[in-house]
Amino acid sequence: MGNRYSLKKRVLVTGGAGFLGSHLCERLLAEGCDVLCVDNFFTGTRDNILGLFDNPHFELLRHDISQPLNVEVDEIYNLACPASPIHYQFDPVQTTKTSVMGAINVLGLAKRTKAKVLQASTSEVYGDPTVHPQPESYWGNVNPIGTRSCYDEGKRCAETLFFDYWRQHAMPIKVVRIFNTYGPRMHPNDGRVVSNFIVQALRGEDITIYGDGSQTRSFCYVDDLIEGFVRMMASPAEFVGPVNMGNPGEFTMLELAEAVLRLTGSKSHLRFLPLPQDDPKQRQPDISLAGERLGWAPTVPLEVGLTRTIEYFRILTGK
Ligand code: NAD
Ligand code: UDP
Ligand code: UDP
Image 1 (cartoon, rainbow, N blue to C red):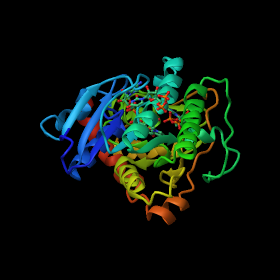
Image 2: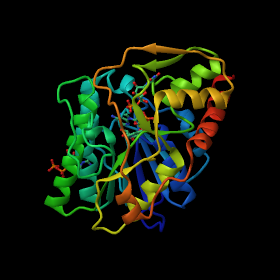
Image 3: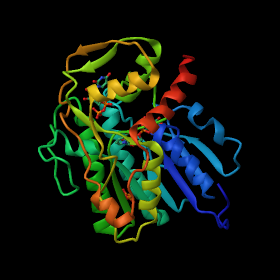
């Protein structure tokens, strides 16, 4: 980090060695910030940030965000949290601790340093929604005791903490609700649908469709989301969110499988498996608020983003 007289903005990215965090670190460095990446490498890897170590404005700290952290920063992006069901269900108690204790610690840090702090929340706060598409005003339909609850309720509690610190201490907060995002550096084994389908197609293995494949998701390319994050952080102080970010283009899992097969030229077959517990049937963001307040909308079509992601996985898997 630059010394305290440096003119560069000092930005902390928790979870900076993960999929989204590594793209964010890269973007912030390109904008001329000093970037401190804090990560405990639970799901992130040094490989994701290998290209950044030569940059003197990049620094890495191995630390678990559920523990207090004393650093001097101007802005904080709080991304630390396992994001895929396989990872967040591996140690559900730690998942809740990461979201809740992590939020308390970054908020305490932000309070002391007067830093602006952005929370990476999730569309999962809407649970299995009964309103479609979901506007920010929808309160959600979440099971508090299911196997997804450690993630959903942890993220909901983190939002509560952000808004209470804002009300109680007049702190500059920003809350973004991220919908399914994909791109290079997704984890190949984290069970998310885009990475699963691409890796299966490249290896010629069966494409695993859970349920009948009629459930829908909306997929946002990573570069679009990072642009949204940066705009949100720079937005006027009175705009705190929560704001939805995602791509409203909605596809069934069968349509996604067909697109991946077409773009990879794979001959893989479809295999139908049981639907996991509490798996939402539909998900599509209403992004009109982000459009009005941030002038933001995604620009990368699914086929373009999938093609870039397939290229990444071709190199990773050697296929
Ligand atoms: P990821 O698993 O690739 O990244 C999470 C990072 O946080 C990893 O590097 C991991 O090692 C780190 N981490 C986990 N627990 C930690 C802890 N206790 N202390 C320090 N570091 C810790 O996932 P991602 O897709 O990059 O997600 C980043 C954030 O965005 C998460 O908060 C996630 O909930 C949110 N999000 C992502 C998506 C998506 O589609 N990718 C959707 C909604 C929300
Ligand atoms: N905290 C931190 N770094 C700081 C300041 C605070 O990790 O630079 C942690 C602190 O340990 C506390 C949490 O943030 O557990 C909340 O801080 P706050 O000031 O809101 O509460 P308090 O310290 O009064 O419990
Ligand atoms: N899914 C699937 N096959 C897979 C992985 C996932 O059909 O190999 C389905 C899953 O049941 C869900 C959707 O794809 O309906 C998106 O799953 P993912 O885990 O990527 O995201 P989330 O459920 O968190 O939105």
